[in-house]
Length: 184
Length: 320
Image (cartoon, rainbow over all chains, first blue to last red; front, side, top):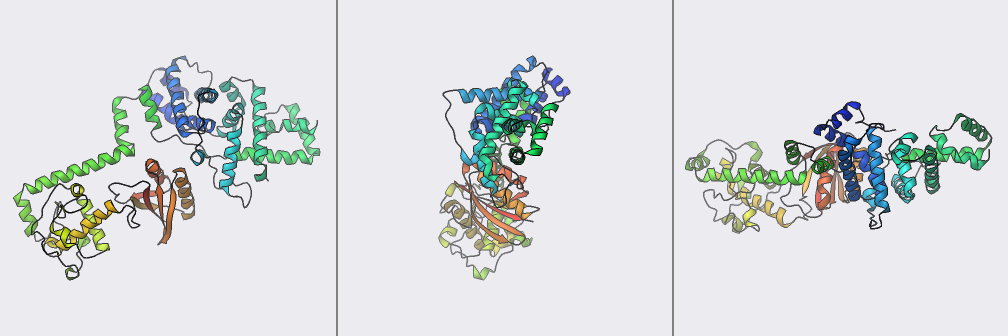
C-alpha cells in the first residue's frame, strides 16, 4: 500500500495560516496521486492535468473550510473523484482515446504467465480497467492503485462501507473475468 | 454456504475485511471446495496485478501551473522556477546568451588592432587538441584572404572547436569557392559563423599561419551540412552518452520511454562497453523525452544541432 506523504498536522496548521509555501508542499506531495486518479478515470493526459489542477485550485479555495476530520489526502481524493465523475457524466465531454500514451505500466517482474509479453498484459489490464463502469472504476482505483482503506473510500465518495465493499467486489470480478487467460 | 455466497466474499477476504463470523464460514467452505479455492487463487492474482501497476507521474511543470492559478508562490520563486525548469525556455535563453557573447567578442576583436596583431604574430604553439592534419594533403584555397574577417558570429568559441574536431574526424579538401568568400557564399549566410571568427585566446594561431586556411572551410561545411542535411545519418539533432549500471534494464527503460514519447527506434549498434541507439521523437515530445532520460542513467549531452528537425533525431550511447 502506498504511503501518503503530506498528511502531517503541522502542514495542515500552516495551510490554515495561509502560508504559501505550505500549499506548494501540499501540491508537490500529492500531485502524482491526484493526477494518477484523474488519468485512470479519464484516459487522457490533457484532461487529467486539467482536472488535477482544478482539484488543487478548489482545495486552495476551500482550505479554510476544511475541518480536518479526514486526512488531507482523503480530502483531495474526494475532490478529485467528484470532479472526474462529474466530467464523465457531462454530456458535452468528447471521447478522447490516446492509446499508448496513457497505457498503464507494470514492473518488469509482474508478468503473471510465462511466455506472455508484459506489454500484452499491460494492454489487457489497461483495457479491462478502462471498461469498468465509472462508479466501480473509481473504487478499484482508490483501493488497489492508491491504497485507500474501505473507510477512506467511503469517506471520499460519500458511500456506505457495504456499498464500497460490493462495488469493489464487482469491479474485481469484472477484471478477473477479462484477465482470466493471463491468470495462473 | 453455497459456492455463490462464498465467492461474494472473496474480495473482502483478500482485503482481510470480513467479520469473524463471515471468515469462519468462508474458511469452512473453502476447505471443502477445490473450485472455490482455485477461484480465490485467480482473485488474488488479479488483485496483485492491479496493485503492481506503476504509479503515474504528473507532467513536468504541473506544480508551477497550479501555483500560477492560485498565485500561492511569491513572484521571485515563480521567476526562479520559470528560469530554471522548463527546457523550452532554458534552451533559447542559452542560445541567446551564446549569441550575445559571440557578438561582444567579435566587436571587441574588430575594434582592437592590438588583438588582431597579436592574433597574427603570437608565437604560442597550438594546443594538441586542434593539431592540424598534414597541410600538404589539404590544399589551401587560392584566393584565401590573409587576415581574419570577423562578421557576426552566431556561436562562441566552443562551436568553432567542435567544427574543427569534426573536420579532423573527416579531413577532406576544402571547397575553394566558399573559402574565398568567407561568410558570404554559405547556404545560410546570416547564421554562419565566419571561419576565423574571434577565438578567445591563443589556440589556432599557428594553424592560421600554416594549415589554418585548410581548417576553416571544412569547418564551415560541417555547419552547413547540419543545416541542409538534417536527415544525414551522421548528424543527429541531439546526441550524448548515458552512463548506466545495467545495460539490459537501461535498454528496457529506454524502450519504454521511447514508446511513452511516441517515438521510434531507427537504429542500434554495439559500441565498446555498450550500445548506440538512434531514435526519432516527435518535436512536441522531445523536451519531455530529454527530461526523462536522466532517470535511466547519467546523461552527458553533446553539442546539439542548431535547429532540430521533426521528428527530432536523438543518438544515445548507452555506456556502462
